Image (cartoon, rainbow, N blue to C red; front, side, top):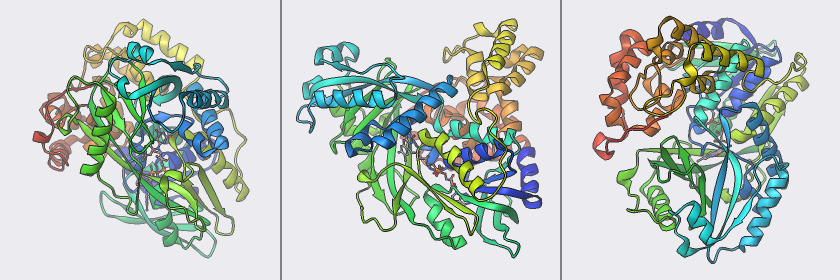
Length: 548
Ligand SMILES: Cc1cc2nc3c(=O)[nH]c(=O)nc-3n(C[C@H](O)[C@H](O)[C@H](O)COP(=O)(O)OP(=O)(O)OC[C@H]3O[C@@H](n4cnc5c(N)ncnc54)[C@H](O)[C@@H]3O)c2cc1C
């Protein structure tokens, strides 16, 4: 907690060029991009980093093939471009993956039209991924015997990308990147609104959600990246905008791995929307839904669960159909969708998924509406342009402000890994090579873990059974990743909570040891807090293990 306490003290005592409210993907990339251009940036979130919508996505980095039906070719080309940039810049995290899309009989489009669309999609993506193919029913069965071809007419195989770890980890790495460039960030700090003082500086009323203490944060520019709460925060600060948000709820269910083949299975659900079964380590993540809601605080309903289970069961030939008893974990979030206040569209499925930045030059204020994880680089660049237009002096760009460290750093890391014999060490539980895991999750900071292993080779051993996590990681996480609650660690810095049932986790000796490293004398309190507050009782969830 030293890092967080130190940052809290700085937030209340220093002046900033920009304060970013909200550290979902939009706020985190804004902070990282601005800090890289030499500005003094502060970043706060009322919850944990990525503790709201950005932890509930489908984990896809994609051009949004389904938006082509609404002729949004500009949006799709932009997203494909972003996807390509992310594939190139984060080669260990953002991975190309094949999608096998099965087309039902009586679907509204002929398979050849869909094939033509996937070709156009591929071309809009500048042909940077593997080429799409039309698949006969026989070929579908050969590739994936699980698919129920009795109700299908043909299939298409095409490529997009996904996040190897998870969305929240991806977001956190932008927060870390921002902090490395001098940004002062803290989780669990809420803004209760802001006003400009007589000198024109923004004074934001902040509250530390852990201690309850209140303080003010002073900044020249205020950036509202509060996602589903952007409109509410603008009301608090008296900012008028042309856009506002419509909210659409989407859920996913995590079930035991349904196929050993590493590809996304795509179907058209009963509501004719694209619907996916996505690999997540040794689990499958199935979803999603798209339902308009008024309140951003949403939960999975029985109807949502039934919709997902009945659709997947109808489209697969599973030995036994999936039931609620197979659910290991659930994800449920709201998409903040940008729409003009003058627009009367109320069908969320028709609303464009583009992002909009609105700048109020007189008030030195920026609001970010909508967006996608995939769009993050564009948002970061756009916020830099806006802040420059507001009159702040940004340093000229020095290379990319995002991405994994360059080839030279990687080569030096690989040489150390080889010298330590770590290139041969695969986790017994996950089969993953330790050095790959460390680089993917911690970038150049993985070197700190190599230092620790050099002194004590026992730190290569697993810490929490069946999750892939090694002993060398936990000290680093405790010092650098601002873990306040056990859920921060299990759900967002890692995805253990999505893969391992709570009853298995509770029995893990390694988990309590991790708590001791993370929380010191408060270990038992945090451990008990997590399991007592569990939304699901252990009897709801059958005992399973999993790996990250
Ligand atoms: C079901 C689903 C599937 C999706 N799938 C994909 C996908 O596969 N690929 C993709 O690219 N995109 C996907 N998306 C879209 C993407 O997840 C969202 O667009 C994105 O995460 C929104 O990020 P954000 O930063 O705007 O909002 P958030 O992540 O919600 O961040 C806003 C933050 O602001 C904080 N905040 C709010 N009010 C305050 C306050 N007063 N003070 C301090 N902090 C505050 C909140 O706590 C929150 O953490 C999906 C979305 C959903 C719901």
